[in-house]
Length: 456
Image (cartoon, rainbow, N blue to C red; front, side, top):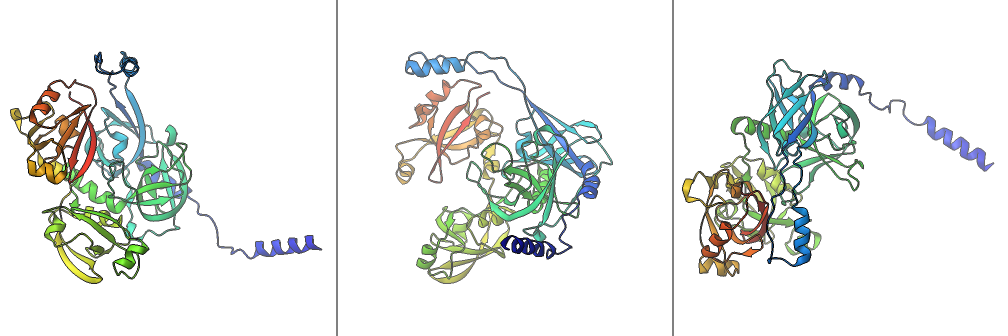
């Protein structure tokens, strides 16, 4: 009797499913848009390690390890692959920055077997986007969708070359919108689209289509413990990509708005203590002196809940909004201060100050491409530093510029050597080897940072 009851119930459930609930057929869409999708192969010249003499400088066990590592090796070119797509019929192609970063040769392959050599028009690390150009005409192109209308639960489709398997297709749905994923440098300027589309190595830079055959995103990252897809993939929205493309075409680089604050999320306890109705906004931890926020009247302890008309729900929303603004633009900022709502007006500055602080300073620069000056007692006291040297100028295209060193940074260490004053700095850089990654430690806005540079 029980068995019959279960059977009847199961049958009733089956027939009650709506007839119109059918999965989409992507076949026509793929046929229409795939000619504009390309495979990208890159070649980068490898560099053989440079041998160094560590005799007397390191313990025996470390010296032996380093000597093994620095034995001459055969120089081999490094190869990588990714995807991209044509955005204009005269040969402009969009892909990821990390696909072509460091490439000496870029090859673009179409589904009809045509091949072209590509040049980099411009590349932007912060958004992970790059614009390429090939010499061709009347190419098939894609259309862009308005990502402001994208909804969680929509069907989307990716086309690319995962693991080198050309022009593979994978479908899924939008899992979330506006995901904040900081880079390894802590930067957070892209509100990613999260999907469950199977994205794998080689899909990077490829398009993410909606059911209308329009591009809603550029596939950029996956979350994986194994190196392959586990159903968490992230794409750059076209709302971000279009602004980046425009600047790369005009200037070859991207400038973003900058506010000059340190922020954090507001949890329930903080919301109660700050007299907010609910946990929301970006809590200001610190304000850079003479920065845009400081000049606009923003104070530590303020909570920004709306910026330039956009709601700030989580702290990660603020860099997304500010970064999309052009330097010099004015923004209306809604804050809560001591439980009261206030409206401030702020003029954003340029985030990429390093580009403005880099100059052609000719013979006055050292081997790193820097002009430095002594750290004053007042600076050392305020930063609680024993010593260091202050960067006064940065030479364009120098080792320091490529490492991201900016005017105003305070260098305290090079390699294994402390740097307390100009004399020590000059002595250390005179002995630095060429073609070898060297660690540099410096302070910027009170925060210690490690980078590496290579003297060519």
